[in-house]
Image 1 (cartoon, one colour):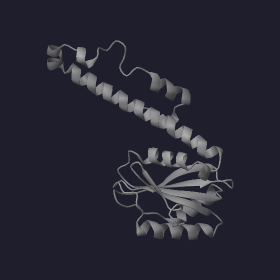
Image 2 (cartoon, rainbow, N blue to C red):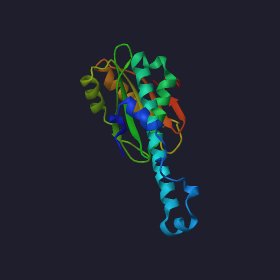
Image 3 (cartoon, one colour):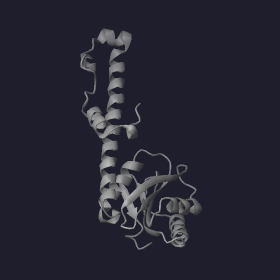
Image 4 (cartoon, rainbow, N blue to C red):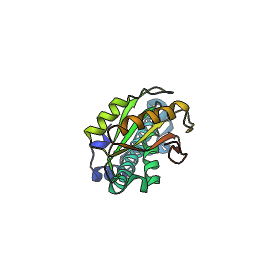
Amino acid sequence: MQNLAAMSRAELIGALLAPVLPKDHPPADQVNDLESAYFGTAAVASEASDTLLDHKLGVARELLMRDLRAQLSAGPVMNSPQALRDWLRLHCASLQHEVFIVLFLDAQNRLRSAVEMFRGTLTQTSVYPREIVKSALERNAAAVALAHNHPSGSAEPSRADEFLTQNLKSALALVDVRVLDHFVVAGDQCASFAERGLI
């Protein structure tokens, strides 16, 4: 499968608009039953169709993520909270393990870069404040927004999440980097620490 991140916008749109099956391939329901039973042609056609459909969904996801990222880079991230939530949901949608994402922002709170810094298991991720501080300094970030997912399906922040957020806020404050928010993503839910008064 192609690396979608390396494709240009024009290539992605072309892939999205391409036919699901080659023009000369008969639809699965028109394949002769005897031939299907003998050669498995219908199963092959169905499998090829599913693979191409999965590819098209991946292409559509890549296009959406690029557009949302462009919105977040154009102005202050917190002025587009829905775009940020949508980007986080798309990023975490298919993950079966926890990830910890740091969005590095400039002095006007525009997105400089979004980095998946730590990867964990189904229920936990080890996060190292020193590495986040180091990355913030390397990127000359003035602020950060933090995010992680809960593959379990509950976006409710845990006590450990709250403790980690306060530790990161303290560590980053030592180098004049503000923590604007911390999001917990689970399925279509996205809980904000700032909205709950936890930052």
